[in-house]
Length: 633
Image (cartoon, rainbow, N blue to C red):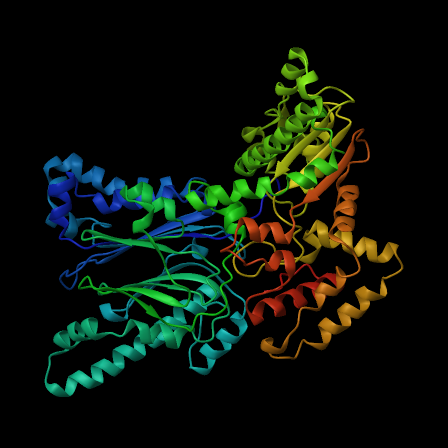
């Protein structure tokens, strides 16, 4: 994606099911769990670079001994920073007595992060300051182990105001209004109630307090706690939690918006945001990994019993299609094939954009994340060219000469590495967004690859949000190769609406497709549509979210997708550029052909899977009209 946007976070939960000495004997290290957590987090670093956090719980420690460890970092390389600090303690032990690194009992009693239950998180901050306080996991500590709670998640809730007010009605005084705090306190409240209820049921039987809390840990109904906690949640989430005594859970939203995958054998149970991470870290087959069902929770009891239980009734499946287009790493078998299919399905539009001049066209991709869809585009172009060759040879028939046949067979799709990102320059200029001249040099180009004033230069991007990098940098640089036409191909459809489930796309004015539609309305004498839409949105401000409709769709109704694409090209073309510029987008229909199981497309269509989404898009439009730069949620 040439426009940098922040997006969903990453999660990694690991439960060691065997005694710690087992891993030392089998794998030769007392740090088997810690090493696996490093792999699970590092292999998902694409999901979060603003910060990271790691928590660990030790089982069956004596009172007075530390049993919860947590560390968080907002360093430039937060994962490495976390594990460097964790390992510093082990370095001290090694300096004192190297043999102690093989003594699991000593380590458990004398060093942090040596327990049986781990939770890791990678953060992309879509809201709020990038500070340690904003980093997961969050801790709600208590002197009773069964009341201590650690929470981390890949989530965003649209109705945080409702949840906050509900906490106030319960008599709580939350320290902040962020959804992370309300989620932690909501689960914590019903965790406390479950503790109290079980205590009241066992105490009359004459058990000592210590024995009662052992029973509470065994009998705690995690499913009931989650049902009561999440019944009002509106949004997308994969929520992880650890209880101090050793129970754990991962809860997924009813629409399956946010992803979660899990694997279990007799040694471990592991949950991550992306499937290939588990395959790589544990060297297991794709068929052995399960996707957590929407509306369900994976519940891991301290005694090792694991179950997948329905918490909230599953709703229409709306898994995020951006996961497939851009966010997830392409190592997943299905994602790799789907991204290639996105490239193949846009071939017809691409050929039309260059007036069928395949022989006078050079194809490339910007940025590297578009590489897989580029492979698909090239495959599709090769198939298209093979048909042309076939028709030419058939038309010549027996009269074809050897030289003519050789010339036809020699036709190839011209593929070049046109642009190379200068990451060091990017790091330098990120300190000052006003240095447009430096921004224009973020990419280097390969000279001599284009026939000047003759070739079409076609570059594929996985999506276009704002178009800022295209206008300020990419198009200017590509124009230096003097092509007669530059065609930018987006493997994703036009992004028209804000996201409110974990992607940093919250303001209408940030979308170049929206800006184009507004310009077209004014230019064609339909500015009244803007005011009418504003009034409709304002009329819904006092309604319950379940009654709200998405009236922002009216902004786009008067125009075809092609008309909006043409205006986007005009808006993004720098005034001093020589080449003609065209921008084409994937169709909604082809998106669903390529990614049939991930139908969540609200940022393209405005069809939000939850009522809160419709409330957010109306608020975002009101903010735009009223000149407010605030987020809509």
